[in-house]
Structures are given as structure tokens and as C-alpha cells.
Length: 420
Ligand code: EPZ
Image (cartoon, rainbow, N blue to C red; front, side):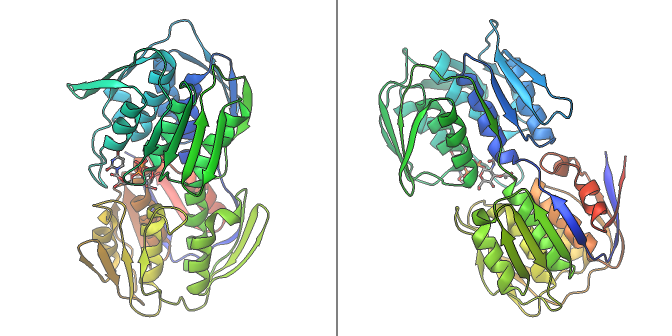
């Protein structure tokens, strides 16, 4: 298994270009199952979860043609349509559940594996299933698979999500696209990646309108047209590189992401002392000489502070001047990085879902173990500001969601090597 060798401390300077968003590309790729005609998707990040989703689509009968750099795909439907989404593929990538909505909407049948748990929490799919059921899906769960059918087309209806869920919102929007009549979804998640999904579907002729802050109205259409679409930049990769600059008194220009989509994070970084200038698709960020502590950060649904940047900000607060706290309110077990940060010298106390972080801690390089995708990148950040050598094991977690991160980091001055 690959590992990273990082020798710190480093200071970053220069320019980094952000890859396409994994969390926008996954639902967009899943929704191509709705199409009869070919579609072209551009700006895909070269990360393992995208390969897994493309393999899943192939197993369902889609034909995938890659461009040379593999960042663009042309997806064709073939005659051998399949409706079985296997555990072997879905277990490695929870977003596999997103094929259920399009399969039931287009083909009125599907046998899709339950995604299984993951490190950061149980992550059930009850909101997905209850919403699709309201649209007319009948299902029963047998041996870890969702056996789903519908009597002909799904029927539009009003659905109010009891809890805001990114995946359940995406599955429902995709399913309602070909349903009969009008569907109104209330209490939707409104992450930018979901807007990217609805922009993609609208570019193919879907009738989708955001009629309220968290209310989406979909009028079903009979079929979708061919379209080409370029996936938005990755919001979490952008936030991660902003933290790298803030952590290392760095000076970075971050390109290919619309800074308007991360106002909350940029305001927090300004509160910590970073100097930030933004243009249309560019962020210039300079790290402060002294990082200011922020006494209470709480992860919430968009447009609030995202859970996917919680671990990265925790590293920043370890170096801030004073006591800070971070409360994780989205997932029940997303502090796996804390034990590893303590091995470097972090002083963090966890009580329930709140972490209290003592600032001004000296980090000394050590051997570390990755866990979930975002916790792993937090260990990379911590190793970058540690004195001496750190080895980070099991970086396959990182390869799931960060495209060639060691190349991007080396280019801006980080001493990092991948050991295979
Ligand atoms: C998406 O996961 C992202 N994944 C996650 O990013 C992100 O952390 C999460 O949204 C929150 O922003 C993708 O977009 C592929 P949810 P998702 O449904 O859709 C509970 C990463 O690192 N819940 O908004 O699974 C759930 O357990 C990943 O890229 C139910 O209980 O998130 C969680 O506690 C990690 N029942 C909360 O709701 C359900 O049916 C929010 O989950 C669905 C969710």
C-alpha cells in the first residue's frame, strides 16, 4: 500500500489549479443512466471514486469512451441494459446508491446494493428510500440489496425531507426528471454540487427550477437530449489548499474555482488572519504571521461551514494563538484524525461531538495512519508543518478524492514523496 513521506516544516508559494469536483461529477455521472442519447462530461477529476462510478455505469450497460487525458468521457447507452448494481462496486464508494434513482425512473426496476457503513458513521439511506417510495418506487431489502420496482413511470408528488441530505436530494431530483407530472422537493440540500447537477440536467432539457431557498420543482419530461457539460471545480480541494497557505505563512494563487461558493470558509480564514483577494475564478491567499484562534466553529449544511473541511481547519487551529473549538454536527464519528494529530503533538480534548483545541502546539514528525478521505488530507497538512519526517500510511483513502495531490503540493514547495 502506498504511503507519503513528508519532511517539514514547509512554506507554500506559487499557483495551484483545482481539479473538477468529485462530489459534483458523481451524481452527474449517475444521472447519465436517464439518457438514451450520448452525453459528454468534461473536467472530471482523475480520482478513484470517479473510476469506480464509471465501472459501475459500465456494469449497468453504459459504454464509456475516454479522452486522452481521461478528464472527458463520452457516455453511450447500449442495448445490453443491466439493473444490478453490485456490492463489490458500491461498497468502495457510497455514492453508488445514486444509480438507484435513475434506474427506477428510467427502467422501473433495479437491484442496488446497500452502500454499507463507513468510518465516519453509519450513513444509512433511509431518506433516499422514503423519497423514492413517495415517487412510486416499491422495494424490499434482501441480503443487503434493495430490490426495487415501479409500476410504469414514477409519479410526481410533494416531498419534504425530514433532514437535509445531499445524496437523498440528488437521488430524488434525478428520479423526478423522468417522472410523470410535477415533483416539489422541500428542505433540500443546496450544496453547489447539487446546483451543478441541476444545471447539467437542464442543459439536456430537464424541467427543473429552484423556486425557494431549499425548494426544487421538477416537471417530468419524456426523454433528455444529448448534451455536453463541464463539471465545476472542487470546493473541498479549494478549501484544503486555502488552509495550506494559511498554515504555512504561504502565498498561493488558487485557480479554477468560483470563490463566491466558499464565502463562509474564506470569512473564517480571514478571521484567522489570512489575507485574501478574489477574482472571478481565482483566490489569492497569504497566510498570517500569527494565526488567530476561532473559538467556535460548527459544521452544518451548506451554506454554513462544511463537515468536509472540519479536519483541515482543526489542524489550522492547532497552530492558532489560543483555544478554539470545532463541533461536528453532520456525522457521528468524524474525529478519527484527532488521535493521529495527537501523535504529532496536538492537544485536543473531545467531548461528545465537540473538539476543544489548544493552540500554539509544536508538531514533531511521526508515522501516521489515514482513515477517511478528509481526515487523511488533514494528516498531510499536519505533516507539512511538523518538524522532521512524517510517514502517512494507507493513502489510498486520499487517492479516492484528491487528484495527484503530491504533484500539486511539490509544485508549491512541499517536500513530499509517494513510496509505493
Ligand atoms: C455527501 O455525502 C458527500 N458525498 C460527503 O462528502 C459530505 O460529507 C456530505 O454530503 C455532507 O456534506 C458526496 O457528495 C459523494 P448526507 P451524503 O446525505 O450524501 C445522514 C467526501 O469526503 N443520512 O448529506 O452521504 C448521514 O448519515 C464525502 O467527499 C441519513 O441518516 O451526506 C449524515 O449523518 C464524505 N439517512 C447526514 O445525514 C440518509 O438517507 C448527512 O448526510 C442520508 C443521510
